[in-house]
Length: 406
Image 1 (cartoon, helix red, strand yellow):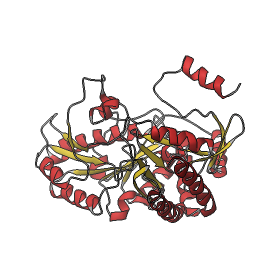
Image 2 (cartoon, helix red, strand yellow):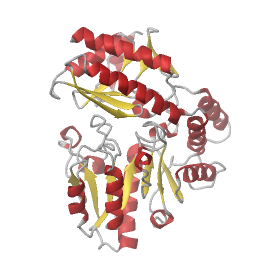
Image 3 (cartoon, one colour):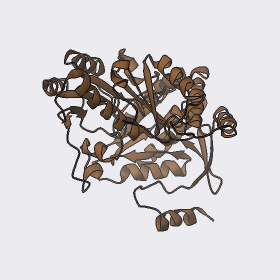
Image 4 (cartoon, one colour):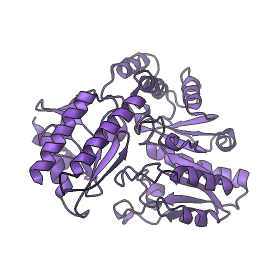
């Protein structure tokens, strides 16, 4: 079978809920992936930051193989040898009392909302069924009914109503709007991405996160940081919130928490928040399974021992320096922005223009994989294992494509 055959199979038998780049990947290693014809590409999407450790990291393969021979799943009906160890590793790494393991990022978001509501009723004293969650416009934390109910993106919510009540939407980066919304005594939490990834890598102004967390504390509201994409070294710090010294009340992690080997997510919080959950009130058959726990501990140790946080900071500086230089050479670029190895190029067109997609097609032909988001924004997020030499090579390809179109 060739690439066209595989693409046709997906079209014939799969739901048409994605619009992938026209490449069929067959294997991956480090920052590279290969298609079915054997062509090699640099991966500058990293499965939306799920493979921070690089594709098919040998330590993760070994950990998965070893655990697969012992025990993969028992459900939470029984204790296992790995769950407590993994919970301890996460809690101590990030400074929290308790950890709730789930699977996907959107499950972590749903869990955080349930926790915030439970806390609001049982600790803060909000009247029954009146708890409110503040979210930022442009947010993206998944596509469940609650997630699309909190969305301002028509592609997420159009024709999916009726919607879940209890969300107040305010502009991102708007502290005045946040304080007005916080005046509602029934607010349980403010849930926000430290950098809005799907919206095109929108980086807030310096001090925004710190000020927002302080406002939440002032009004006795939980500050929930959705670090599913920005966490685990992606922005040049273990957490994007740490750039401003912010310790969220509730922290959401996922994606790279398993290094891309399986869906693993986690919610971290204090005893005051987490212990509002009682047996039977929340759970997941696969959440916290032994395989997920072993992979999570290994994924964290790889980030630390291979100094991937520090490398993300250094390579991110290298990438942003290049992008700013490139923006001065071509009118195709309206703006570049980012932090660490989560960067974006905003193309100088409207969101309906196909130009960003066409640029990604040309980059693909050169051996560099990226994909537009919101029409005219191209996200750049290679694995955190990328070297200086590899980054130089990628920058050369980007410059070649952009200048050829200028």
